[in-house]
Length: 279
Image 1: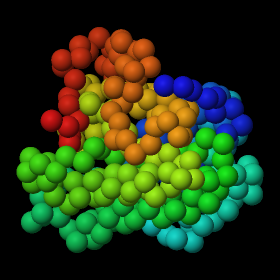
Image 2 (image 1 turned 90 degrees about the vertical axis):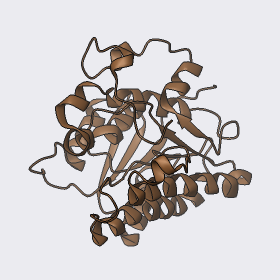
Image 3 (image 1 turned 180 degrees about the vertical axis):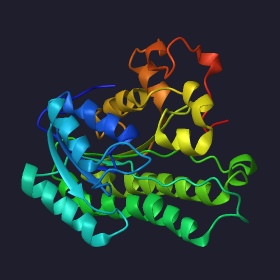
């Protein structure tokens, strides 16, 4: 897997005020990248750490050039403004990371209609609209990438039936991305997805998937960020249209020891909690 530095490159990330999106932003900042963050969290949340402004500060401290954009990926005007501000500030866009996502694992009978709509609007529509808006500028970049944080398509009864609405939304992100890989291939724009084998220690895991027990059996967001870095620094005409697994990407790059990614140091690999969608 060939790699190119992100020095001087511009990364536009949906979400990114905390968790995996922030970890990806900070990994890009290590190269001195320009990092534009489109996120809703303008002021501190009572239950969630971080705002788009604190994330921008962390990017700056980490060596990158940040741009904090308060906006909602569900709003077309906010998407257009984010793309315009990013291009006006940094001169273009090299990478789009579709990180913004909503999760609700409720069974169909219990899921509120507004939550179904929210997952479709953020996960699927947001991925489509942000990627589409950035595509004309990606086409001008030297090594353009779209990366969506979504799983491989695995339409088995096990996963479709487990949480139908959420599964539909995450598979929708993947279908958008794989579709755009084919659509934009002639322009040299890569589009891939990335998903981990184990749960990642984020607020979603803490609050929705099992609390402290699952958090202790998870890996840190840095494993996702390191794999994402390898994907978006690969040649855009060499790797596109793939549904990639975090650990497989790292292994292909020569990483064989994942111990330092354990959220609880010393946790053996066999004790880690497997993520959903992977058999």
